Image 1 (cartoon, rainbow, N blue to C red):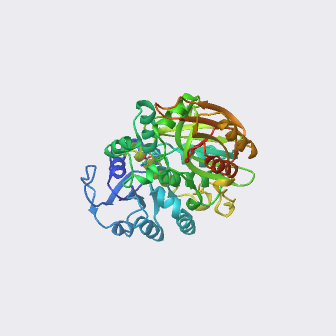
Image 2 (cartoon, helix red, strand yellow; image 1 turned 45 degrees about the vertical axis):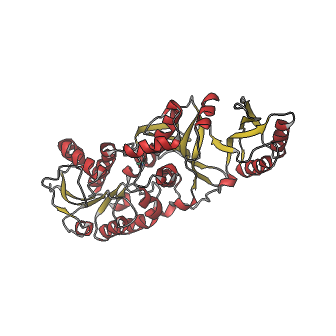
Image 3 (cartoon, rainbow, N blue to C red; image 1 turned 180 degrees about the horizontal axis):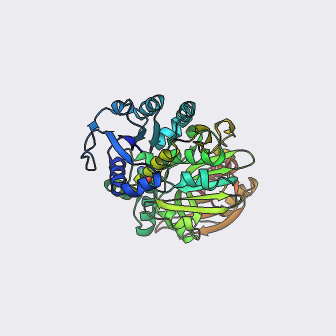
Length: 433
Ligand code: HSE
């Protein structure tokens, strides 16, 4: 049988890893795919990260997607443009696509999948979420018998590395960020990592596949980790919690919660112990219960592992009837339902509050009265020693679950008290039980 011809767009970290894995494991891969897979040509600008001997190169990606000989286009250049035009052109030319582009799928996936379905083609995107962890496959196929209740993921390695270093070594945020950049974990623009945007791209995709809803990146509540300080990490630890940047998608009776923010998680949970640059996704299905997926969320060969798995998936289905393929977003396109996404004010969760209060009688009573007036129940309180020469003391409170709207209203009232310093620190807390 003729080899399947791949047109590769991008020979950076992931592109180079893909070439190396395809070559090193060629015989194993073709035994699985049933066909030989040939890197027919590639488009790349700048320095390639692999040996390109025998691969015809061009700087123009459109030459690749317009080449009639190419069967599958593998897009590994990232960013919205020209990636989007390249993929749409490849589809218009009848080519299947594999992409690692999380931003593109999260923001333009609905349009891309509609075009692919119209053409009877596949767009596979396992490497777009959590690098080498086969979470798309697990959610879309392995858990297909379940009603998914929620998905919670540590899906940005850079933030996890920073928070781990802050906890283990007591380092400051900015210091660790500089190291993460130097080590190449962070995106080209590190604000994508630390402000939660990268995680929100990935969460958008996970939520869509979990619940059968359209991709809605613009409705994700996003809060990054740049406001987390060493003291909060230390107090969390003292109370038996870890702070993680969590992407959380939860189905409720009122709609879907879709949020990325620093989250306190009980340290006894396995996911709370996922450290450094590693990623993990916890999925709760009604039949299976909780399942946890762990592995490298970035890097050349871990991500290439997902790229190659997608290529093999596409090769295996080349001869199948498009109607009978696994749908792009797990649910049949005509059964994608537009369930409302809840605004953050309508989310119900527990909270960690850190306030700085004057150390005199009645101060705490005023604070607890305001919380009680908003129907907010306190789970734990911790008062720390004042710093030398200071009359204000740090007070840490954990609340039971409450509506964010009520919590914010209570916090505004507490901040208005003359005995309380402004800027109460608030971190959401999830037990993930
Ligand atoms: N910058 C991303 C991270 C890379 O830190 O997880 C993988 O998407």
